[in-house]
Length: 274
Ligand SMILES: Nc1ncnc2c1ncn2[C@@H]1O[C@H](COP(=O)(O)OP(=O)(O)OP(=O)(O)O)[C@@H](O)[C@H]1O
Ligand SMILES: [Mg+2]
Image (cartoon, rainbow, N blue to C red; front, side, top):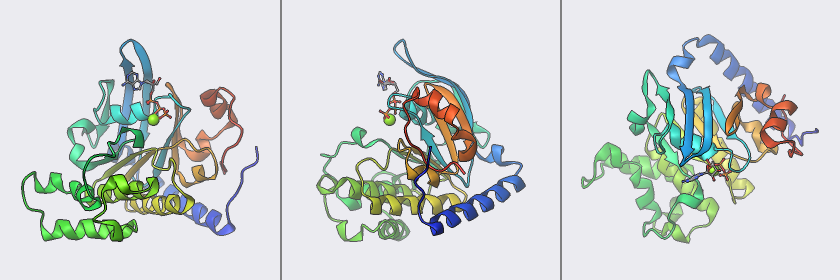
């Protein structure tokens, strides 16, 4: 299957990131201690299995994509990791259960799960990212306001700060939720399908910030379904279809056999594995 490659510059950039990331990873023998260890996660909705015995690691400093067909359990895996759905197995971050350290996590759920009629402005939504640091009913500090302003500027949404979130386009809403995640100053960023229904420009802005976060050593975990060129942005992939098909570097995961097993042979096109 032939990949639709982007520009030479983009390839060079991705290759140099790859080499840097690989050498950093080699030097960091302790990376599995620093990252997230997922062990034997299973989730049942009533008697229906959504996920079975998922075990894998998510490394800091790498952009990790969760891939699989509709209904594969991608959102469920993210929720199970954060303790948002009952699951067996465990998810450890730095030697403790991740679900007991949610103050270190910024989570942006799938668009369909957000109430867009909620009467909040862009500024309100972004400042929500500071609530854990400030506490409810307490005044936001000057530092918090500056962090939020900077985050809005970083995603290019400063001029919309007084706009109700329900009156933004899908791409603008995603940028605002990314800004809220940035204001949390989290160690772990979890985004569920952030690219659905957004234009190329917004996708590039968001990927650029994901890369920056990964380069800062954060854990950046993104549910995605687009098997096109954008898959080349990811350093690591977790490929599932109720069970784990493969996890590891993009090159190792993106084999025809793995894709065939995940998508039951229905995959027609995918990005550059090399
Ligand atoms: N709250 C729920 N109650 C019952 N079944 C559910 C619930 N949430 C998800 N499921 C089922 O669990 C399975 C996995 O769902 P999940 O939303 O995790 O898949 P997904 O990979 O994120 O799919 P999509 O690509 O459509 O977002 C599906 O069969 C879904 O119908
Ligand atoms: Mg989903």
